[in-house]
Image (tube, rainbow, N blue to C red):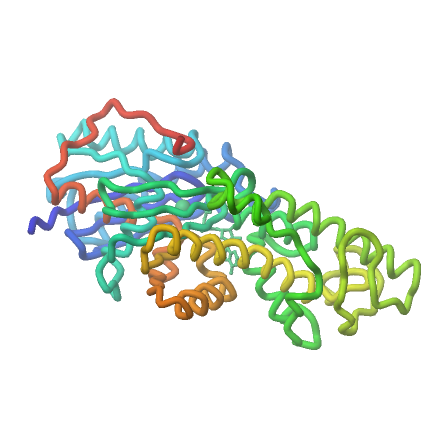
Length: 388
Ligand code: KG4
Ligand code: ZN
């Protein structure tokens, strides 16, 4: 089969990624992130991301070519993320790619970012080969979807997505509320593992009952909701939990249960008073920070795992691929692996540096499309902020 040399550009969110592949061999994967510039906002600011892409895109392309030891003349094709993503951010990558295509005459492919998250496994050093059909669970700071992949180029079906916040965004927002660092996912995981308080005792995931969005029997019966997610209620619930836990401390200094709507069953030694700002001391009012974090993490993981396996059951597909930055969550990988194993489904998680947004995933899908001799996208395609 043909082994096209393809350069891929990814700028849908805060990573400026340029990757180069030869067929299914990864030559280089260069990524610059503007994450540091978003820290003080507690989330990705589109305008800031776009500006950072403008600065980084040129140097990243030059670096990728140098790292791979190839020149523009050697390339067979170019690929760039066309969406979904932040439109201003996508435009920077698309404009750069079109400029390169116009000046070199190389064919250019506009790439679906979600398909690219799956296609990246084609170039993973430890790849068992991309098994199709597969159900894909994609979870990041910018998106959360369940897809059915019959073929990575021309048979991709969106089964469901989040109707509000992305899973990673829920981690980021709740971490902020708890006074934890951005990005919130790793912070909440560390807190849940008990690593942010002196005791080092892992949190109790059953301490606080956080809502499982769109998971009632009625939701699951509704085809429009069965594979959809909603995480925006979680941050409200987290806020209520914090408020109630703090109120419980001022009301009854030795109390072990919080008032209010949050149902608190944990009694594991939380003492000190304080606000969310006191979370570094290991407690939020009457609750242990570790318990809140573990319970929150469990709520997110629960729905992700449950709906992914429902998708397998409905479609009869016995392979799952996990992608996106939230794949770094150990609890998610553990629970998903357990449930998959229990029902005879094979779980595949590409190396984590390939799960987060990068250029190699775009190049990988571009190479697959080019190898099949598909027509290029031309220079007239637009960027799409959403899939539908
Ligand atoms: O794919 P990614 O690197 O970038 C974009 O979404 O653009 O994903 C980043 C997201 C952030 O929301 C971050 O909080 C989340 O992934 N994340 C995690 C973990 N590590 C990163 N979420 C939960 N647990 C983690 N260990
Ligand atoms: Zn992504």
